[in-house]
Amino acid sequence: MSTAADSATHRRAEPVPAAPAPSRARLQTVLLAVGIALAAVNLRPVVTSLGPLLDDVRADLGMSAGVAGLLTAVPSLCFALFGLAAPALARRIGPIAVVAAGMGAITLGVLARSYAGGTTVFLLLTAVALAGVAVSNVLLPVVVKRWFPHRVGPMIGLYSMALSVGTSLAAAATVPLTAEMGGSWRAGLGIWSLLAAAALVLWAVVALLRRDRSGGGRPAAGEGRTAAEPSGPIVRSRTAWALAVFLGLQATSAYATMGWLPKIYQDAGVSDGASGVLLAVVMAVSVPASFVLPSLAARRGDQQLFVVVLGICGIAGYTGLAFAAGTASWLWACLVGLSMCAFPLALTMIGLRARTPGGVARLSAFSQCVGYLISIPGPIAVGAVYQATGSWYLPLGLLAALLVPQMVFGALAGRPRHIEDELPRVPATA
Image 1 (cartoon, rainbow, N blue to C red):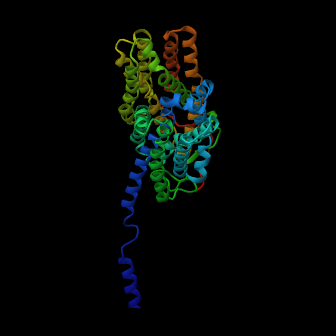
Image 2: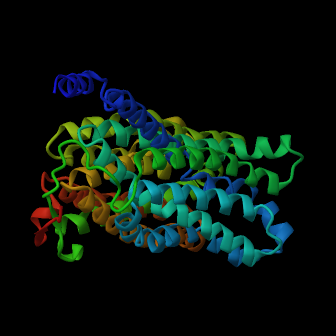
Image 3: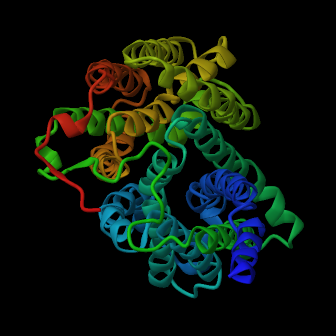
């Protein structure tokens, strides 16, 4: 009897296996935060590394001017189409596993297209990489909401800043890297697969540590298992539509600016080199602002003030470009760069306008997919108006005018409400 009692006492005195859990949890949290940043860095080089080398790619592959022009619309189309599949995939295997697969698609697509022998294969492999970008675009806000529920602002800020860094880095470094590697566009595009491969390895490790299966693993702290998930069609949510239109108008301005800003400056007498630097200024301004803005926005119940301030910056910037692009050039670049911070603001609102990760997934997919579809005609229309008029007054006036409805829909999306309150709900199963 005493032996059994002593044995029981000894067993109770043994160290419990759960003791190292806090350290492991901290490690997983740090790895996931680094993974979010590294994934975000990889979401734009697929596109921005191609622009500086497009002439070389066209010449080598025999790509027509029409197909080359189509490439400007392919990213938005792929983001919209492939992003729709992200929520269903996340429910089946978990958001972390899907993002890891997205990093794999980016790695494969970017590397393989650098060996493409024809235009069709090049386009298909670019679409593979963009599919990885699309699902990651949609699900990274979901990962933030689920595993960082009380740090949505700072984590969206980290994500947005890293995305801006990746955009600027690929645009600025692709040509010098290509020159260092012998001048081949294949090496210049393929080198970015290494960055994607690093993200893939890290996300694979995170997925293994989290054992992200069947809905994405453990719920975040404070996320109840009986939380009601939105079950009605999300098209019935006014907030979702407002956010989608806001995102679409923002993307219209962003893609038109990135595509045409150097030409606007050059037509005003600014040198080719200086115009490229000014485009880099637009991107660089958004790096620190993208980090700070989401945290500030998340502290407020609504984000309407930020929507209006960014819209006014954009109107002032485009007006200055229209009438005095060659004068105070840096000022207009900074103002336009600030207006483009509407994107991280929209990402923040995606995380705030839904209570549950499931709601964030549906809202992210809907708003980004619809928004990217809305943005497709914008840059094409700006170019068409410029060709028809021979000046930038009307195209820049169009971009400035679009900021008015952007502010209206952004203010609607920025109201303190949740899509769960606008849709029928059913209790989630345990």
